[in-house]
Length: 217
Image (cartoon, rainbow, N blue to C red; front, side, top):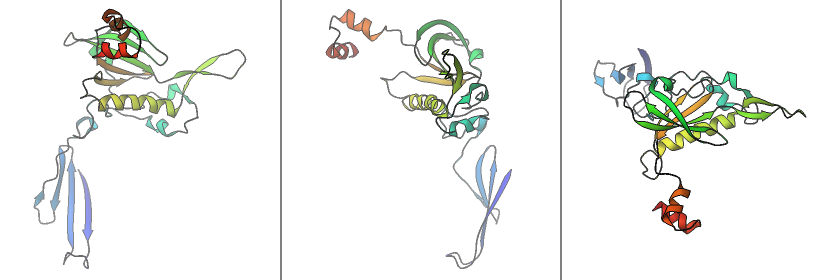
């Protein structure tokens, strides 16, 4: 239990010294005045180091010992081997999901179909490496695995944006963000309705902007 004492001296609007002792326990917050009368404060659960106001999707839940790298100069390269615990996201992805086939690849990651080992439901998992290939500067075109604080923050922002849009029907829902030593993994709803190009082709509306709008209605 952590005790914190605040004192209001004579000369203030209160006519006598007021001493309030605030007590916080791991079960929740509370204050106790000097006379023993308990003052109830808004309850805040801190199980798993989370408050009741923390985002259940992207709030840190484990130790983020390497979070200091988020505050490095944006142009300073950081060895990825030092960035194992940057965000504090859960690290038990592989115990909860089984990875299946690839669904797509891009410049910054790969999306795979995964299945929940408990419910059997299918989801899409976007895997984003914390590193990106960086040219060494040599004439041989060699690359090294490095990252920067700006890139690490970019990953964090993507997670935060998706989490904040969880209630928007037009945006795919992020179920949970996970972290391991090399990557961040975003488990999202699996969209199986085909690509926009497929819908435009089947609708016969053409490939212009109006056709895209019609296919998305």
